[in-house]
Image (cartoon, rainbow, N blue to C red; front, side, top):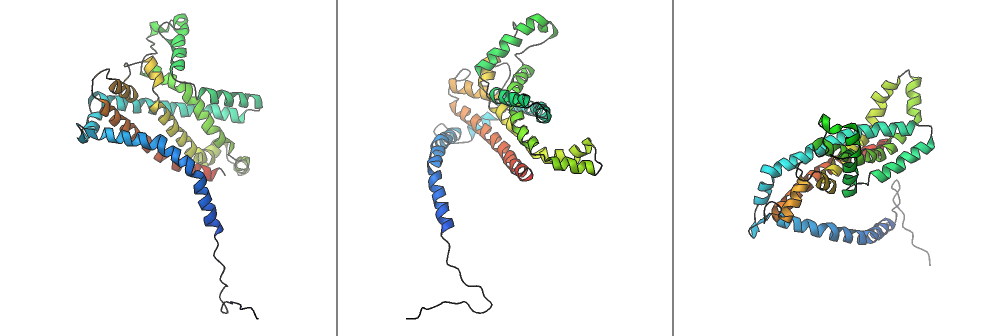
Length: 297
């Protein structure tokens, strides 16, 4: 029996059998990611639903009264104080961390690079009560350096806005180093050589090549530092208490009833405000990271 052959008309490509490998691989990928998705849904979804339910509930009914109260008076002052402190720490930490990272990258001593990166990885995660205790013992009212250098006579106080900003820089600068070093390593030597061959100075190279390429990573680092300082709580609670108005401290007071009783839902509304700010931060950070990754491939 002769086999039946299916041929395409002249001038047209032959039809190929449908490929099912891609869909099969995609299905396997979703199956492998299912446990992670379930974990994320339980760990973040349930608290988010509870937070939204409490933030938009007042006297047993849906209302925006809690959100309105969270944007007034002392709560608004605390929110703006947190934004101001976080912005200062982010900008200062980004500048100092970038210069330190550049010094590490251009250093000829590999041991120095490894030591700085290792220390940055440790210090970037050092915070909370131990960090506050270390700074109080060093630069507090009775701290070692405060007593020896008589800093109190010159108006120095660790328990202030600027003192808290200095403490936050302790873990923000190392974090910026970890963020910027890979981007600096991504600057290809061929770019600098091409600029030098065309008569460009070092400043012109950074002005027209280096800084434009690094800008997404630098801005992404600023955003990351802002988010870290904005969400910090334990260090400020242990060091300044209510001296510096911060939204995280206001949330803790509302939840525990230290100031007013029955304001738990206002604390949830303040948390929702923080989520909105964090969402705006991530909306800026992620596109910048994607752009930076495209340039530094």
